[in-house]
Image (cartoon, rainbow, N blue to C red):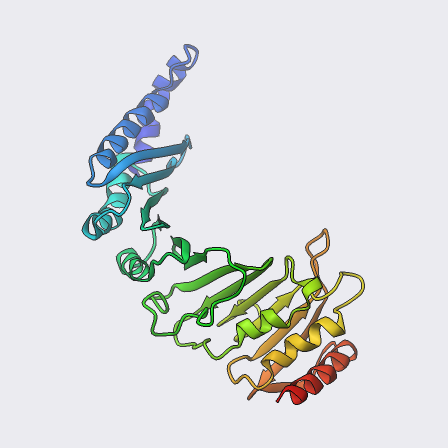
Length: 315
């Protein structure tokens, strides 16, 4: 029998007796745990404040959402000690396995956060701390990914795509995502261990989007797309939903990546409608060229023909 279940049985009768008076023994026990958690976390080296929210559950473990704020530019050892030990201690003090612990601090000019639980948090934090720069607005570490959010700019840096040798690429099973907002367009790059994306001409892709389509356009480069299961480039915003993908807008984008040996699929889409649907024209890629006719063939043909002409004229 779990400790929480024993607590329910032990306090059940008292709860009925005190309920009419508005004094719940569960609430009293919860308040005592919160005081213990706050006292423990506040006493850790470098901690400046603690925030917590508890969602009560009368028959199971309460859910705890705890945020620990550290002083600016904390020592590496202090951060790692908290990342390594704090959540386990909160689990014990709160008597609940349902604990989400978010550790936050500022390193240089970059906002950092690490959400626990996750595998190998120390390794992920160490890697993230190595790549902090003035170009990074924030770094978020969670059980699925390391998210690097860059400062807004007018153009994408030439070396925008991290190489596979970067400390933050290939940390365990974590994906690494780079987020850019450039000249009104969004650019998302998602890395996975073992895939080198540096050859993909992402800057050329952004530049190829016609000026009247760039605001709120989205360029997504994924080392391993969850749906297609291949290395994929998706460019969204190349036309209006209901009118189809604009050939004049899509062709130069496709032309920009013809010849690239890394991409296995390219999806060109319209902007989203109110129901978050879009029209898609997709091309499977192999050895730098389109494999087959594209999908759907009747819409892909004109884009592919114009893209090949554009690529030939620029070579």
